[in-house]
Length: 238
View (cartoon, rainbow, N blue to C red):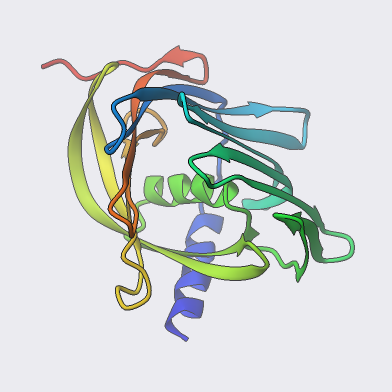
């Protein structure tokens, strides 16, 4: 009941503020704590036409790679996913996911690692990429706790987040004033920890992400350079 209420309140809060999407690009350094090598990551948002946008993420290291791509449209301040594709290889965790969001038939059709997926579709349901963009706008709107319904494998999961406060992040683009957010998980069910930092002065662009896995592995991306609506991201004067 509590999660359902949070979800409704979050949707209502976003709907009262006009969402203005701005294209962005961001390059990151990517590091695994257990591996003596670094990689790179790229995240971007671009307009495809008058109705559709594309959100992309790519990460690559010597031993692993990941590509993630969503297309969606923005309608009445709601993010409506259209397609989602994920390919991951390396480190013994190869994975391929394809999802199509049919808003006429109100269903999600696809496959996850070769297994067919078919789920009911309603406004508010997000894929594993678009919820991140909705989170970005929720943080910009000043929300302190957020909850999203997300297609995760062959199920619809609830992703909860809370704002931890303001924090300055030192990046290669300079010192960035950011809002720190963590994923809220039931500690009796998962020991994973995910923390994200969004830049206050740059349309709440993701500037850092840190994730600790249950097996002790840690992964981090940190902003190297980027642009928002064509303007290069720069840090604050020190």
